[in-house]
Amino acid sequence: MTDHALLAELHASLDQRRRPEDIAELVLRAEPGLTDRERRLLERAAEHSGARRGYATSMSEDFARPVGGARQVAATARLFEVPDEASTVDGDRPDALMGFAARVGDEVGWISGHGDFLDDRLDRAERAAAGIEVSKRQYNRRFRALRRLEAKAGTLRREQDKRRLTLLGRSRFASRITLERFLSDPAAACFIAYYVARRNLRREFSLSGRESAFDEIAQMLLRRCGDRTDWAMISWVYADAQVLARLSDTERGRLLGMWFTAMRDCAVHLREVWEENDFDREDMIVYRGDDSTTWNLLAQAYNTARLSWLECLSATGTLHLLDVSCPGKVMRLMAYDLVRWRRSTGSDLDPDTLVWARLPFPWDVLDGAVSCTRQQVENACARAGIVASQRGWTMPRPKRSVPRFEVTPELVHGVEVADPVWASLLRSAGAFSGRPVKPGRAPEITHAFEAGVITGNLPDEPGGDRHGDRP
Image (cartoon, rainbow, N blue to C red):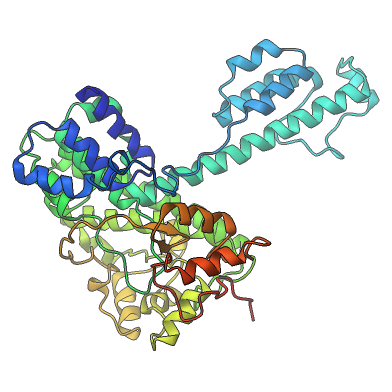
């Protein structure tokens, strides 16, 4: 494979969830100018790649992709007797679906947003007045098809937004980097691809926090970048002070605006999910019926955007703006068994949750509906027994030490399993999912415990319910 093809594969990984080990293997092949020390460091990761192990991971190497509307387009085209048009419609674009619906729907007087089957259909007299000559049965079939196509366009738009925000929360603006720009700077490209893979690692079910994604290999790859590096491209993924210092004032200002826009976008979606659910703001524990998946991915995206925004404020010397408006962080919903595990060890509620519960909602602050100043945030943190500046409430978190590279574990819903085949079996059985185990599969899980295959940390009662009943 040529260097160009290897870099193109690295670029494709920005929109996926590849293991750092597999990215390290590609970097070794794409970068011939590595020193012996750099090559040895990358070899420590690459020796665990799927290509060298001879088998793949049991975990998905991509984020869920929304299913397009090609099937609905084809069905609608057949009904309206325009089958050739179906091939001209991009089923992955919601606006293309709606454009097609508007074109063919004109034949039956269909209007977008008026798809109620009882209230919006035309009666016989109205169809005659509109010059619609198809039978009532054919009219009803066409109306239903258009309604399904419109609903699919709405679902597709929401799912695409969800995936976009998932990528934002994980790898910042990496998915926006064009192939042309990526190929123009191999050193920066290798760092970005590896660092993105590290950021995309799954969370382990544990009471300890996550290690920094910026490990010793990422540090080495960043050090290989020099004065001619596209530092602005790197800043889209790694908004560190040393990177932002390399940017021009214009580039820093543009990045600041990008992150503020992203933060507001996330806040709009968070407000919608909050109003649609009945979350307990005081403890942020998942209860049955809560849409915790959507909330947590939005919270991660918002907090990532907010942290990057703070990094840019710090780099531009404008942190004093927080004196006027300082939107707070958003807490993720926590699984009930993790909370019970924490309490069994003598730990109490995360103090950040106490701060979150006492501050105005961030979306109200960003809309200008309520005030939240730096002083308010510092006072709330003081009452919770923490220092705002050390917990990322009023400035970027202090930098942690750079961790050594660790092999990516096989995880089943956050629980480490020693063998990928066993991991696939346990996942298909429903282990650790928070739902009832599939009928007849409980013996497999019991055997896995007895065989020592499950190597991850678990509470004393491994069968704990992840979804508590709301009191």
